[in-house]
Length: 120
View 1: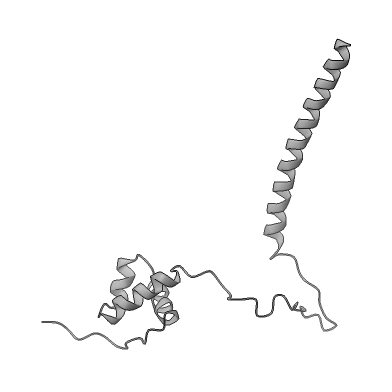
View 2 (view 1 turned 135 degrees about the horizontal axis):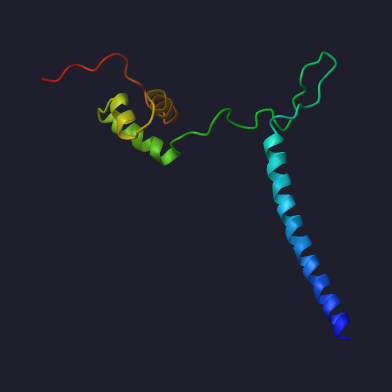
């Protein structure tokens, strides 16, 4: 009877190890398939061009997500409209000038052109 208990205990331990290994493999597979999503080529039409699915058409913004959220964009716009230059904002928020300019445009600010007048 004790040998049967021992065998059942070993069997349950082995099942637990297999279960943990399966979970690890599933996580790895998920990360690999996620990374391959952009690398896998989609279906092609007769001319050899990629066929766009209806899901991808107009699915949203292209490129990287914005560095500044909507609330921060509004704050940048307020500071810009109070007289701060885009270069000053770029230094203050440690961002590139084009990032600041695109954030201001996204927030609806009308950008000033040219150099600001020199202050005396």
